[in-house]
Image (cartoon, rainbow, N blue to C red; front, side, top):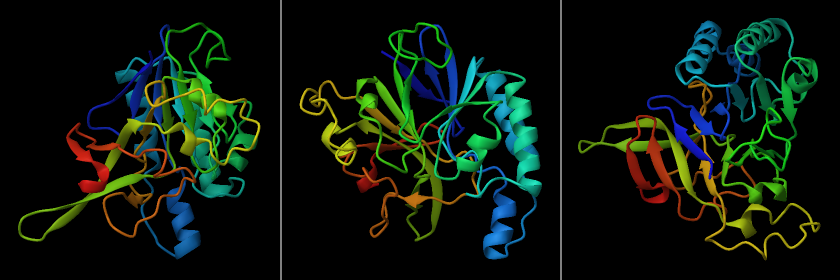
Length: 273
């Protein structure tokens, strides 16, 4: 069975695929400062160098064989240009100089996937399974673990139900924590729990080949919702009433998930934090 373990203190995880280790991150949102200036008139100093150096350092620290970005490598939805494209070119060159890179297409990535198709492997918006000998793995080699990867902005390919673990981004989960004197802070968080197959593929169409009926709660994969790699990208406050999820299958597909802080602290059921 594939193991997906967070890197302590970082919005990143390592997936053990048998013969290969993959570093997984979600929602890099490169060029976010350009987007905020264009969308909201907000001026922020660029953290492009910091984002690139953090990713490269994590690749080295985890001894990863591949980088997998779970969608939204870029921030602006349109084809990248100007400062944003320059940041993406430098970032992609830096990481691909170290390891092969796979981009799972997110709702912000259509232009990126097209512009950089020669530099990164692209998995479509419905997601896919990596690391299994019987499928097209990230490097074509056989492996002992099967990890489903998707961004989460659209209904997933039912094939992901065959994975041991399903990893997704898109939500940017955060928790609001209050202290005894009424102060509060917001922290990025992981969500993990058993995936509910019927809710996960309910909108994926009628051609499901009986997959949902043949999988029960014991056989279903674990679902891991990644925190955003980019700390400036905001997120969903999962423990605050009135906050709605972005993915069409959440929260129904994660009926009993737990929340964890980046430092590994387990907060318990995310709805009761």
